[in-house]
Each structure stands twice: as C-alpha cells, then as structure tokens.
Length: 333
Ligand SMILES: NC(=O)c1ccc[n+]([C@@H]2O[C@H](COP(=O)([O-])OP(=O)(O)OC[C@H]3O[C@@H](n4cnc5c(N)ncnc54)[C@H](OP(=O)(O)O)[C@@H]3O)[C@@H](O)[C@H]2O)c1
Image (cartoon, rainbow, N blue to C red; front, top):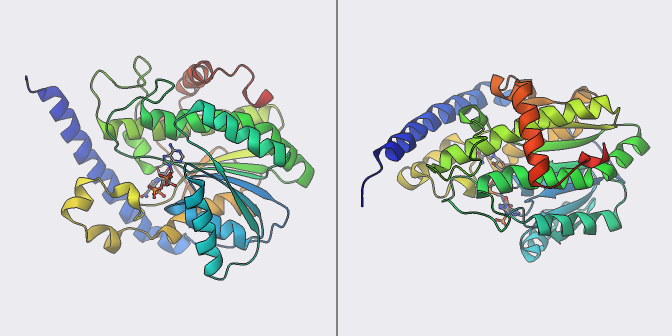
C-alpha cells in the first residue's frame, strides 16, 4: 500500500499547530484565571437545557444551574448515566432546583427532533440552551444522516436543536423581560479551522484535528449569524460562544499528549469545575444582557479569529446548514 505522504505531512502540521494553540490557551488561562469567577444568581422557575450534561464540564454546569434553583433538562445518550449524575450532585449537598434526563444523540437528526419534541411538550418556555456536547479527534465516520462526526455532533446537530427550541426560548425571554440565552461551547481550536465548502466531510484527506477545528469555527460562524438575525427580528434571545479553557476531561483520553505525558493535564489544565465558570458567566452575567454574538474565555469577551467575522462565510455556511438540516424558516424567524 502506498504511503500517503501528503496526509502524514498535513497531520503532523496540525499536531504542531494544536500544541501551539494549546500552549497559548494554557498561558491565557494562567494569566486570566483570576477573572474566571462565578457569581451565581437565584433563578427559580427558569428552565435550562444542556446537551452532554452527564460527563465532563457539563456535570459542573448542571451542578451550578441547580444551585441557581433552575429546572435543568439534560440531553444525553444514556439517561441512566444522566440520572446517576444528578444523584451524585445531590449527594454533594446540592438540594435546590430540579432536573430530568431525556435521550439525545447529537449524531442523529431523528433523535434531536424527538428530544426537542419531548422538551417542548413539557416546557413551552425555556430560558437557557447550552450546546455543550462534543467530540474531539475521533476517527473518520459518517453519521446516519451522512455527515462527518465532528461536523454533525459539534455543529449541525446543535444548529438543528437550536432551530427546534428557538420558539420556546423566545417565549421564555419575552415572558421574563430578560433575554433567553443560547451558549455554544466552542473552543480556541477554532483558530485552526477552515470551512471546506466543497467537502464538509473532509473525506478527500481526513485529519481528525482539522475536522474538530472546522466544527468549532462553524459554531462561531453560527453564533455570529444567528445573533444578527435575532437582533433584526427583535427577539428576546441572545447567543454567545465560549471557550471553557483547556480542561482536564475525557476529551483528551485518546490524545498523544495524554498517552505520553499523563501527568500534564492534572498539572496544567483547568478542572471541570473551573471549565464550567465561563459557561455559567455567559448564562447569567447581567453585564452581558443585550450583548450577544461574542466569544468569551475566562469570563470576559475576547477576540475570536477574524475568519468567524467574515459575513460572506457566515451567510454561505448558514445557507448550507439550512439545506442540510432541511430548515426553511430558522426558528420561525
Ligand atoms: N476539555 C477541554 O479542554 C475543552 C476545550 C475547549 C472546548 N471544549 C468543549 O467543551 C465541550 C464539553 O467537553 P468536555 O471536555 O466536557 O468533554 P467530555 O468530558 O468528553 O464530555 C463530552 C460530553 O459530550 C457528550 N456527547 C458526545 N457525543 C455525543 C452525542 N453523539 N450525543 C449526545 N452527547 C454526546 C458526552 O456524552 P456521553 O457520556 O454520552 O459520551 C459527554 O457528556 C465540548 O463541546 C468540547 O469541544 C472542551
């Protein structure tokens, strides 16, 4: 079998690029960690939806939402794991709020539609949607809908879910007189991303780190475009993108770094509890009221890659996404 040198070169370049981005992100976390503070507010009656809340950073977000006395809906592949997570949080002494789990597989448009229908039947008004579930550096595979896994799980699935829950978020924001918020958990890795409009699936020459970066840039482009449409339609909903920090979770389990230097993540990375803080800040901060469409890290708005601000790319990806998920009027806007 012929060796594909082009592919090897590309994979090595991405590996090096990620070490540079990762190191820069860790330095940013060290320099600005003191800003990463959490001020919880009581929000009884508010309903929050989170994808991937049974593991990793999501668990800490759920814990904080419960401390705010909210009702939390956890979308997860394994509802038993979600219920065990709630039990564990309760055993730590968090008694406020309430939570329930619904089945959700972000790799399946059918599952996302069923999840959204289950949520909507019980909760006609929503106040927070946290698009957190994610995968990183997985081998090439196509979802049942025919899309590359990173692109489908991290990006397309969350676009579809947002579309389906937007009417309920509008109701929630309107009735409370405060904007409902959508938080897209992106990553600093978006700077390494490009949108391959000719081949979203990257099947010509698949490099997993490239696919992850593409999906995280796509989330930022989505955040910016959706925010501009929400402002045009005067909706009581705003959108943020967040980099949670470099956080020691299972996301790194298959990386060369964790395999060769397992002592590095516990030493240099944020804990999941620290990783949840900027997400919570984006959910709650009164300073952000009416100020969406931005990218946050360590609880402050920071500059994103200029690639995410390109309006032509935003529009082109938006149109492609709507075709793929078969949505004519996004969120009935
Ligand atoms: N950790 C970091 O340093 C870091 C940095 C930047 C951005 N992020 C982003 O932060 C988010 C959370 O990551 P994490 O670090 O907490 O990772 P994690 O510990 O690996 O957790 C990932 C979560 O996503 C869920 N998930 C994965 N595929 C799914 C699917 N098809 N359907 C439904 N849920 C699915 C997982 O659920 P299961 O239990 O069912 O697998 C799990 O709850 C991700 O979007 C990630 O890209 C993390």
